[in-house]
Length: 484
Image (tube, rainbow, N blue to C red; front, side, top):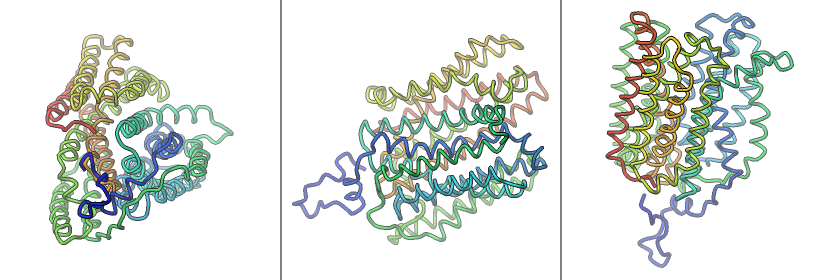
C-alpha cells in the first residue's frame, strides 16, 4: 500500500479508487472511547488466557477434576482461540468488523458466565473451548479496525496501546487471578475469575456503537479448501505444542509435525492457484509476500517466543526457588509492566526519529536485560539482588515496548484495508503460536536442565538462550522497512 493510496483525483477515471480503498478512506477515525472499547475486548481475551492458572487448585477441589481435565481448562481456550483467528479476521472483512467484534464480545461474555456457573469439570472444559472460539471472533477485529480507521501518528499511537494491552494483559492475568481467589468475593472462590468478565463485557457492548464500522468494499468469497488445510495444519501444530509436555514428547506425536508440513505446503499451493484464478483465498499469497509482512513476521516469531518463554520460566523460578506465591511472583513483574506502558507512550515519536532502527535498539535493550538477569542469578544465587533482578525485568520491558508495537505496524503497513482482518488474523495467530511454543520449549528446557544441573545454571543457560532470540531479532531488524 503506497502512501498516496486512495487520494487519486476523481476526474481521472483510470485512477479511480477501487471499492475496498474507497470504503477505507471514508471510514471515520478512531476516537479515544472507540479505542478503549475495542481494547477492552482484547484485554479480556488476553487476561483469560492466564487468569485461570492460579485458580486450578480450587477448581480441582470443587469440581473434582483430574490433571488431564485441568490441562484442558487452560489449553482448550488457547486451542480454539489460535485455531479461529484467521477465519475470524476474514469474517470481519466480509461482514463488518464492528459487527463481528460485537458478536464475539457478546459470545465471550456469555461463555465467561457459563464458565463461572459450571456445575462439573466437563461443563467447564466445554465452556472454555467456546470462550476461546469467541475470543477468536473478536480479537482480529481490533487490529483490523485500527488499520482501516487510522493512519500516520494516530495509527502508531493506537498500535502502541494495542501492544501495551497485550503485554500488560499477560502480566495482569496472574496478578488479578491470585487477588480474586484470595479475596473470595461473595464466597464465589475461583468462579470470580470468570464472573468479572461479565460486567466489563456488558459495559463494552453498550458502547460498541462508538466503534467505526469498517469492512471490505467487496465481500470476499469463501475458501473451503484453504480453510480445511489451514485447520489441519493448525490442529497438528497446536496438538504438538499443548500435548508434548503432558505426554513426554512420544515419537508418534512428532509425526504430527510431518502432517503439518504437508498441510502447509498444500495450503500454499491451493492459495496460489485460487488467487491466480481471481478467487479470494483465506490467506492471500500476494499480501503475505510484502517485505514488511514477511520480514516483520520473521522477527515477530523469535520475539514472541522469547517473551512467552521468559514469562513462563520466570514464574517457575520465582515460585519454585524465590518462594513467592502466584500473587507475589506476578507482582515482581510490576517493573516490566510500568516500563512497557511508559515507553509505549513515546514509541511513535522514537520510531519517527529512528525508523526501523527502533527495533534494533529494542532488541539490544531486551538482550541486555536478559544478560543482566543471567549475571545476577549466576553470581548471586541463592540470594540474588532483588534490585538488580527488578532492573533486568524493567530493561526487558523497555526493549519489548520498543520492539513489539513497531513490528505490529511494520507487518500491517502493506496490508490493503480490504484485507485488514486477514492480515490481523495472520499476525495474531503467529504471535500466539510463537508465544505458546516459547513457553513450552523454554519451560521444558529449564526443567530438564534443572534436573541435571543446578537451578542457577539452568536459569542462566535459558536466559542466555533467550538473549540469542533477541540477537536474532536484531539481525532481522537490519533488513526491515521503516515503520509507517
